Length: 527
Image 1: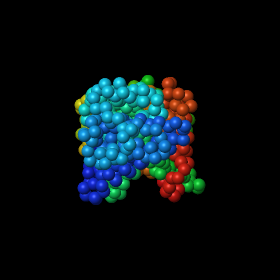
Image 2: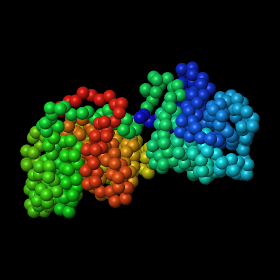
Image 3: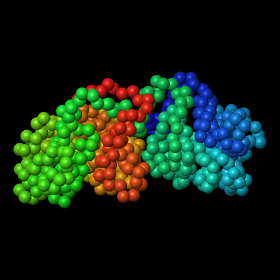
Image 4: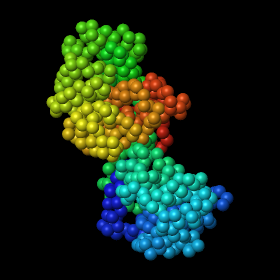
């Protein structure tokens, strides 16, 4: 699913009207009719359907007037409450307002009038429609609009937001004072960032995107971001050739672990196995190697010389160079610690290894000690998977709070250093060296626990190992990782989910995508 900023959508509307000659009234009619159709589909068919539509004085209110007309035509009882004086309504909105019967419209421009005159109507409505403000809102709600949002949220009926819940910033997802909490949001042409980024995502409810007649050539050129859901990601996953063998699906090398952090190494290796890598070799300090022989049954393990310290050192470099021969991908960093000799080893590997590489955890911290190392990298395909704290260390500065700015930060970093960035968190962000960006739609708060990032590293590494491009591997890996978490949460709840729980259901997550109905896939292929 394609996603745009509020500014991009406003520019699309302007160009559709002034460059392509599409009347604004036609766009408004399509928007309102589409909303009404979804209201009827979701909440129609009940005896005594009663809608209260709260409308602002702009085009969002105009959409509300169109909705009202279409619901009236279906014999709904409809009341439109306009939070403005009649003389303030102009343009296409006025054209649609005058089509409504006078008895269906009430004007409440002043604070207090709404509560005094219509609080009972809102309590009795089966559906409350928020057609107040749309995506143009920039400042905190005040006055009668704030009053309206409070009353909408207190109403017992279903709440439908027109384009975006009022009070949610269309681009950042920030709550501007207070915001409508919708059960259903009907958006026009594209989803907006504000629908998908928290905290706005919590106000959106079920999101539906409808076509309102924006010319296809404008649509194709306008999309700012990709939103990863099952339908978007499933086509990337291809089935396996019936005659395939393990050699067809790559051999990944994982360098991970240290004293006290053998679990990180095991999680990466086991998740790579469960994500389809043909062969997995885990290289780890020899002091902790016996533990990992037990923790990893399907992966091969190799002890790296550590002079009895339990930590990776430059002594292991000659053996690592031999291990790299014949491998198809490298994962580097989980649980390796930040000792100076370990940092030097990581930096040396980044400067010399040509394989596709996934760098996580203390591997990222080693890069943060000298970020210029990335300018000397030999691999054309490096994927970094930082959480916000690690991203801040890579940047050498605090990471901004707003998710929309974090998207720009990830894009700028990816472009500047020629790497892929997976910036983890609620709505994980993926950025590519060529400026593309995607926002992940899977996952849940139960995944906020230790080891989840190690599992993600293993998933992405396994996908790269199998021949997926880095961009495909990042999208698939992040989504499948979150989907596995959602499967576990559905079965067990969100509290107490372990990283190892995800590993156990990774094959189920891949299988769900592989058998999603209506997906056109590439022919089976061996890597």
